[in-house]
Length: 321
Image (cartoon, rainbow, N blue to C red):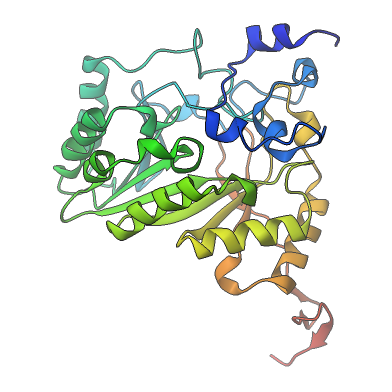
């Protein structure tokens, strides 16, 4: 398909924060920061296997704002806006101006009532959009209401904000995340070590010092981080900032994202090399969200084959049962 950047902007939301814009090297046509956030006419190219809802949120949404795919946890989609819009976003058909609105007060009440009415829900995962795009007042209100539910033990926030807009991680925002008696986790989405500015690192330190547990989420993206050296630098940076690498996602089948995708075989080769290069602390779990809402499948390459195991030098060694 042919088209212009204006055509891309009419179809998908576009936004980049000053913090990320400042990192882009104008002399590099393949800059990995620009590739993540600046629109590309290739986004207008779609294929039959791409899906508007690639991970199948909708069939698992019993009430507006809630996705209950796994027994003990729910997603709580509290906003439809983000400070940046990733060009590979799996929710790109449902976030951003003109795509969706925030939840009404009645919808928030209904979502919380659903959580209250299901005692098997142990963890609530705040997502969107980016939930830390909300004001500290609204974050504090949501924290308090979910923390008041006795059977909820864990509150988890999925966000890019600490790196893409670190000034938002103010003392007021950190206080808003606290939930005495509950475990509070924050899953930080980042895909390249250059995203960690001095201000971003300080924002992460404020969160860690306040007792917020930090884990990472990364998408394996062609032209951004699709080699072991780049991933090693990213994972080491996470660990140095007290963020435990958690998930490395294979790219989802979102519309117009084919230029980011690589094969699972390619991904497994990169992950196998990462294991040889970096500490166990720096190893994320490589996963695929199975299209259609069938959950996550680990893609970690096997280290066992025909009575042998793969050693740290990449050689197969026989072992006895």
